[in-house]
Image (tube, rainbow, N blue to C red):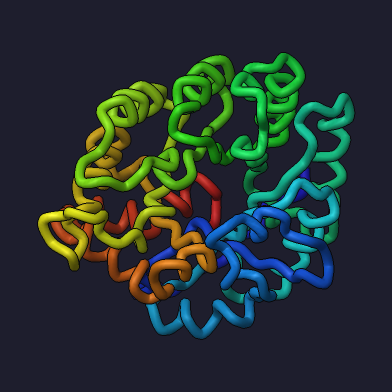
Length: 297
């Protein structure tokens, strides 16, 4: 296996953003951007666009995450990471159901920038089969991901969190990183089923969670306060209690977050929510967990 690249970051660096995207619409379509409500995202977003925003927000490193199920995207993300002083790791994609998944992962590892590959993700959100994660071919693919020394990012609708837990239990040697708190619907209070599902998943020692995807959500209609982060506190407290700070990591979900908030606002939300933690716990959420889990140095 290619030796993994690690980059030193100055001691005063505050934040690692464990979840951001880039895309070039001239290189390939992004069908999910054509969904209602995503119209303002229908343009190119590059590492160069994020760089000044990250610098202004005190973000020292990021992890760029795949957006489409196209095998050509991951090598491009690896090349972008290699040329960047900001991107420290890549969450890529490969066909987990393919009989050649191990060979595909080996090819990515042998890529000239393959040392930046940290995890694989498949957007289960696009699958019509609710048991997709339980398919024998998928489980075999996840075993290959584990054998390659990578993590697996889980992006699922909240009602499939029990399936995600079953899958993580079936693959105890693989670290599962839950994106966006499992995509709960942000309401005046968390759904009790979502809370129960989060606790079940967090009970597995090979799972961690990204504090991402909800940080820019505005208060729901009828909220006690029409401003501030009070509506997010119960969701944050749920995942914090379930996973603990050393299994929780910040991610911006830029540029998707810009549908409701600026990059700076999302970073500030994470800093505000974690302000009550001890210094070591807060450092874990804002940088340490991402560095450890994704081996970012």
